[in-house]
Figure (cartoon, helix red, strand yellow):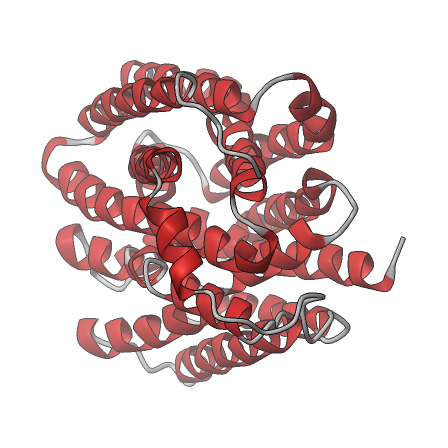
Length: 382
């Protein structure tokens, strides 16, 4: 295993461990700060909304200057600095109102949003299977989601920010050995990037990414609230997230073999249909044990769609604009997540979880139909 591969595994683990703290518990942390409805959704949506701009800009710059690890280290330092500031403020017992907290999370999102895109670009340029590298991120997420519920009070003022800051420090240290530059020389990329984004196949793929992310956003922003409102403890909530991620890891481990046998466009359809089924079932069920048993569907509704999308990007984006192609995908996904999160949080506060998940099932079904149209389009040469 190469030095770059080891560094990527460690970086993925730590970066997603930070998400494993934030995704399951940050809505509850905000709720404990007396935020709800649109205010809560606005803060949760900052990372995906900033993700519309950050990955695309960083991808263009990374390709234009042929940069890789140096840019990842820069944004990792920024994300760590902002989260450390919030942790320090919280440790002193200072509870921020909506606008100061909004501004801090905004600054964090500016730096955090390009991190995954840049790491994924390095991973796609490695000879190792992308899924075999990315599964370390899922393991980090699973460990953090499970242990946070046991060892950190998700509603305490300082615990959550400190936990995120610690794992972001590890992510920064892991990024240090990554290659500074790409193998290709710096060259103009704007015209090729426009041509890629305007092509019928890639534009349709980006639309699928928006729809999928909008549907999946219901899970990120409301599932912990939904489980809590049904009587689940923080430990049970962490267990639900961990079980979902465990099945995600299993699929990522098998993804290389799967993608050699089945076209990515077909797998996109399967994953989105699985999402529609998953959200439909969640909308109709209030039993906590049954909801726990449904969590393995995450392997299809998230992991299968993700690895299929990454394979699609690698096959359609020329090597010299790979970071840009990945940035376009990340921007589309972030836009869909932002739209979904803003809508789902507000809908949850007014009409409840069952309505949220029924609506998400319909959105996922629309995404599956859009993905199915990709199968009838002629695939351009990679």
